[in-house]
Image 1: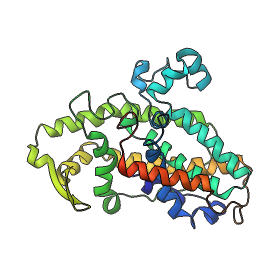
Image 2: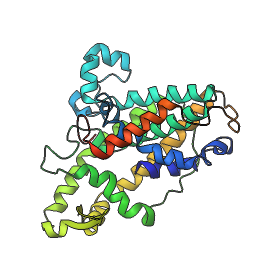
Image 3: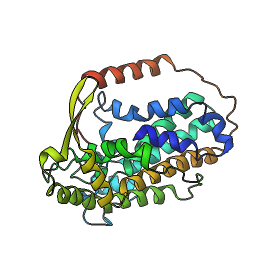
Length: 298
């Protein structure tokens, strides 16, 4: 899902940004998953992907300050990180992207933009914004990957519409991000409830199917179950993916405007540094051979 979101976000940008982003769409797509890979080597990475907002009371969670410094004073840094900091981390990444644009650092722009897209997309996933993040509290283990990966894999290319419009300038970044967070939080109960209701009418041999992946048989939710689930959700997953694409493109655009709209045709730092190459190599190695450090689904 992350690769598709970054890919489609490129086409919402103005020509002045397309001149850099479209020729590098392969990089933006490939490195959209780097934050997930980093979870295999960094204990601190996980908290950047989620927010267990129901820990802080009831919707719309007025007890949780939207400003990070205020939240720190109320709950402490350790407590905030224990329950996730994705809305605040997106703002940190936006500052980094603005700085990269201002300095006209090509590689920093592309790397930061690719990773920023990941965190923004995570904030649009309802299961990233509730403590029952993989259905582990309701005996629905596996629903996270089902919602975020299996359903888009089955329907995104053939059935979903990604003609969205143009990126817009975000005047209130914090307000924009928190609106997306609250939308996701409001949808989390529906995501879980619909899966449980449909499961009551499917035998296990109908709910799941075995498919070959890389020479191995893998147990997956069946196409029939996924199709009914997407219909029962009134195509929520498609809508959230479209909203993610729009949000990613608009954040990229906003960072560029805030940096003074620099000309992007001829930029410096066109290749990866030795340290960047080593980081990518280590992430890929750990991702292939080891387990995630910390919480499994975020």
